[in-house]
Amino acid sequence: MADSNSPKQVNYDKKGPLVVKALKERHFDAYYCSTIEEAKEQALALIDKSKSIGWGGSLSLDETGILPAIKAGGYITIDRDTAKTPAERVALMKKALMADQFILSANAITADGIIVNLDANGNRVAAMVYGPNNVIVVAGMNKVVKSVQDAVTRTREIAAPMNAQRFDIKTPCKVTGECGNCKCPDSICSSMVITRLCRPANKIKVILVGQDLGM
Image (cartoon, rainbow, N blue to C red; front, top):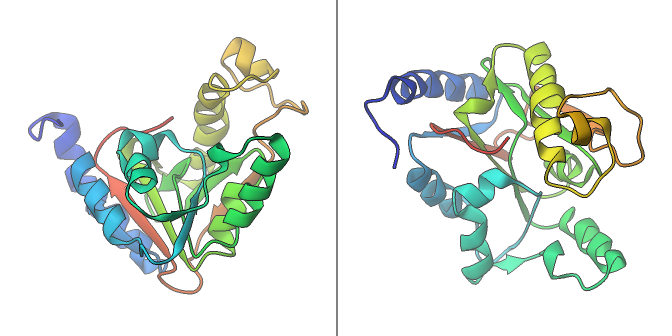
């Protein structure tokens, strides 16, 4: 449970609504939730149980309990983790690109409402940009930065090296913990997408959470 009186929480609760306003000015449908519990409730309220949903790998979705709730809640899911072979996993990931709905996190969001994501295979950013009619982005306030350049730096030098530790890969950042600007076959930094406007308007819903979530 977050301490509502902590300086960090007070700061997040002041800053979060301003970022939401900036996102709305860029035609995103956006919400600020001070707590994880509120974020989970808001996310589930935005999902239509009668329509299919896929997702991109995300610690934030696990930490908020959103993804476990989707998997256990009778939703029509396209779950790559149910695959029995690598080929089946790829097929499910491709199927998720055309799901009715898609939920993911963001690597960074600028204070003026631009979303930056970096992807290994491209499935997460592809689904966000084009395909599902309902896209939900859940991100902690720790992902908010001042500028696009700051977002790129955060994504490459903070998020990616930390995420690399989760996977069985051979990259410089896996060994050193720092970005090596590599061109390795295992690199998780293949496709960077900067989303400066939502088109069509309100297709992408952003839930900004007043907590530190993910990498």
